[in-house]
Image (cartoon, rainbow, N blue to C red; front, side, top):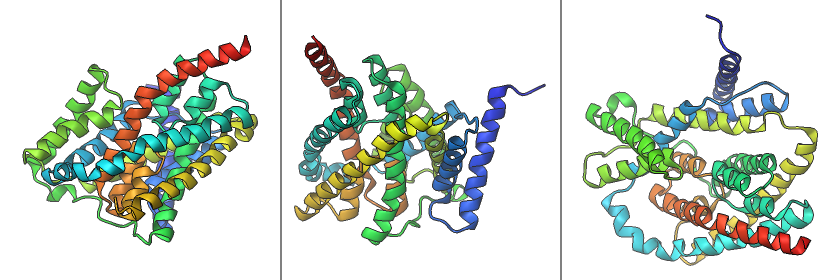
Length: 351
């Protein structure tokens, strides 16, 4: 039976990602399972290769990260939630500052409309911001490229900042090998991942592939059923598909889009990095968190990508994820409301 065109493209994408992983691993580059597929697919996409995503397989891989986060929610983490309150309270201020910097930047410098400027500036999930922007009448392609660039730059710069700026190692144990974990716990993790993902989708939970498994696994962890994170092999697989998905975000990009949308995304993410550095310093000076935890908690990257980095450097996963969840919830709940106000303002100005 002949393979369909989409299947051929998908196999090509997986092959390129695998080659990138192998090359990075043989060269002893950092994070080969993340950076290898990311840069291989990025280069191929920019060269015009017909790459495609892996569909539900890629989404399903994110459940591994949800399980990893949920497994870190222990009674000790719950006891420390009040101690995180002061730091979490900075998240709304941080998001507001990003909006104050980002919206004028995209609106006045790059002349995007109000809706596109707003959703381009908001540090929410890539898919969420693109969907909301599309529903509000924004420039979907520009939003996709700007947010893909934000995630790409943050994922690329964060390990450099962590190693060179904070002096941490990127070779912390990411998990116990599968053959050393109790079989019943692996089964519970798999059930929590599947039910949490599909159940979350059924009830309309945003970020269901991560949050659903996280919630169920967190409950299992709190009652003492689960005591381990997902096996190391699963975490590596999640890295592979996250890297692949970042790289293929540039498929079909044109020279005009590189000059406008991608460049705008690069400049903006550098501005965000400076802002995140200031907030991290503020958090550290106040004694609210160690520098590495503060940096990862306020780095404006995607939730999945920051989860991977937190695991790799051995950061306080509970602290980091509580802050990213707060940011994502604020953006998802508030962004559509503000976007409607901006659209009304734009109509008023055009009248």
